[in-house]
Length: 476
Image (cartoon, rainbow, N blue to C red):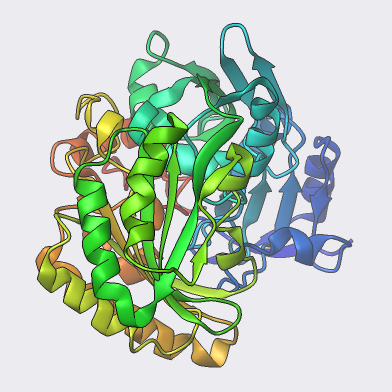
């Protein structure tokens, strides 16, 4: 038997006894992978190809019991821990070097009660999988805008998408969770049980434990809605922005939309608007009429389509396996100077895959929830901006990173306070202050107190980390 060299939670090297690993392996229903095992490389791969890490162990969890065993083993062995749900996070925190990757992707259970309009979902589900089943009953929960994003990651960061202006954040629609905390406890968190933990989980990410089940509220949606994509040449970007500004300034809560400057697969550079209107068709036609009357678009795919297709319409532009670097901020308003800056940088992208994105997914119902009701911060904003530095080859990474940083910096005069925690990159790059900015003063201190209570040794540190200020256990 050969002992295994691993990375501890503090980043030092250690050796793990083979006998102990075998005992741990037999405790798992889902199985344990090591380098060289079939399925190891597939399991460690995540959406962002810029992330290439090799865990010492990958625990393929099949249920809550496996998760509890993983947490206890990792804590007692002082292992660095990564937790993977959908694996779509741009920072790649779902995988680590040398530690243990707790892989939840096999946990795809979903139980729907159409009469009570409630869904119980496991953390390995993607939004495409979730929507597939809920839409069989004409029901949906506000989720991610890309169908391949994970239910767990979107929800724990707050979560928004095409339905959020009407029905609130994803986390606003969370009724309860089952969670395994750092000491191996299995807790139910809801407004009436462990309510402090329930408050923190709704926006605080994976800082406080591993959620093994989400209970969501469902809403009557579709199955047919009014939505799609309309695109114009780059040369008309300023006019498209003006139309977008007018549309978003008077948008009803049923309308959510994005404006993106990007390159289509046929190399055509476009300024495009993607939207979903979850309301009467006649009103939807009225909303998009100015877009169509402006002039013949290069592409007009807006119409009556299944909600599941709306959830997938942006998937081709965000495939797995590209090298992604993001910088993001909330935006106060679409001012003329902001538009000029946006267009200038998008006209000078280092690769055709780079994008500038403006989102109007917030406001409406997301701003109606009390600011202190959950850990999610900045409910007073409606717009989010992203500079997406994207390439196919690692040799282009440096240019894409530099472009995204410069673009983001140039947009800061028009930025609102804060940032969406799910859009943050690696903390070593973003800095601790950016994590604090995602929550704002007052909330961050409350989150630290929760971290002290539920994870005082910072076992769950590979995330947008909220560091405890209580003493950590010394490294053995």
